[in-house]
Length: 383
Image (cartoon, rainbow, N blue to C red; front, side, top):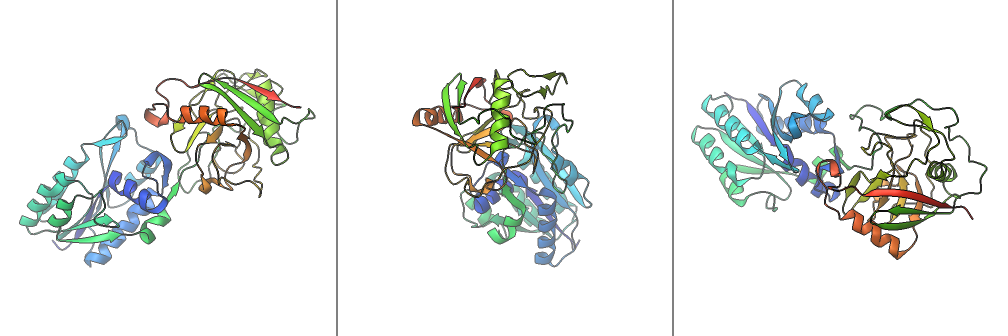
């Protein structure tokens, strides 16, 4: 039948596309508009083949069958089939077998005249050859350049022809992901924090009357991190951090909903750690979804930018959703400039060494450390 079909290995596409567009292959560091990308690929395939589309096949690995918001939305698109393998320690399992099955089945049933394969694994060569023997033209769509290390040379030679997916095509759909506080919001919706209720006395509309905090020492089970704070550039943010650390500000525990003036940061963990990027903590729940029960606005200062490592900044779920979660960078992260409030910097080499050690601890699912990295307490210095 004179129709065409794209078969898209999401792991291959998103990793290779991220490397090309933003120099980052790790999917947990990427924010990709999956639905828009799938639609753009389908349109590209139709135009290249000059044939109507049968449907789009999207192959991905998921942990324990749990769909992300993006994949759930993708599943609802017309003429789109979502095929799921497993995700084990960040690696897809079973996806190549699903692609092989669909490609050869479509060929045997004479459902398509051409198939566009967005993949790179040599294991697919046999399926390509079988489809070709049944009269289907197989086109390999490769992240530019076609000869990159993620695409098997054998697969390139087996395909009838190769179409490159270049930076201009992929860049509109990919961006680097910043540290988030609260569950990520699906694209197209305004990101919102987990809870929006404010406890009485918990507002951050004005700076507290106490002497501004100028320095803090983060005592961790990996060593001390001394940070210089920037009250002249981010007064509300510094005051909020210092007051929560010292028990000066009332906050609401996200699990019990009890109001308290306990020292919020004592005994919390760095729940998300990505080597080469940042370490993140400050959630009373230790899960990346908790906060103090209120939010406050950003303090983006023109003199501060993520052009150097070891900056202390607020995690958020979008503009105006700062709470208690924070992160410390371990590399320049210029894409975060203007999106996250910078309110401090690691003060000395000893502290930077501790941050580097923490950044390199083994992690598992969700970038969570295999063993807890504990923020035992925060000592604020106001003089």
